[in-house]
Length: 336
Image 1: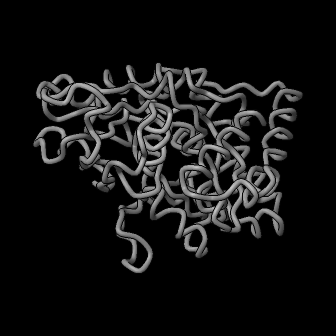
Image 2: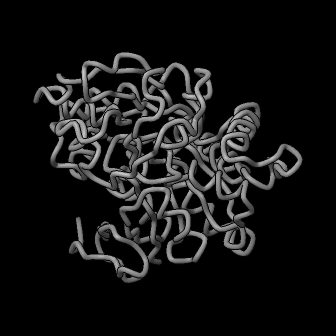
């Protein structure tokens, strides 16, 4: 069941908080977790709430709607306990932030680059133009920068315009207020039936080109060191949520629909297919992809190779791997 929607104090966020709990929360520890969107990319976390996995681990989860540009500073300040803006947190870690990345459900974004006018037909035509993203430093911006770099285009040759959480990107496409917008597949499936994409062109589908771990869990390095068991309990619920998402399409669509009532379930079901295909193995990113991701990200944000920390200072999947072994040994399976 949902508790009352309430607003976050301005000193913390500009978003909205939804406090979610499964039954009585008397003995549960409250934890604050940022979520950047109500899309299928966050379905493991929604499933962990709705299926009671967090409750089983002793947590009452308070969801805070915030993109990576807001979530990462909040995590660093201690205003939240966990952030699901893992890609944004990675950039902060490379700049010296004392954070750790402990779980990633996906290893490639399902984003698409769309123009709002028929005159822009190729990615090379966007130089010098404004590109709509969600928030600065989040996966929308980082993936766009990666895409441009891979296509031989200077990532700094465009202006990144934050459109905020919610309908900002879809509104920009419909109104044509910006020449180019990065959309999630969720956005695309919501716009398509109403003809919201008819005035522009899809310039690029990132799925087959950009590989980056995203919407993963970031936590304070200090919190992980001082209380690894607490982090393990939280990650275990996330891993169970990911397993549920992978095994139960209809149930997942129903859960995501509960969190996003503006999008038809049929559109959520279409998005599910692409998201499901980008699933990692139990929330763990292979070392090779870790290394590639760090190298590319460091180059994008101007961190010199000799200043890049060791992978062990950035990622810590020991708890996730331990949890996966334990769940396999117990024979646990997600039920509908």
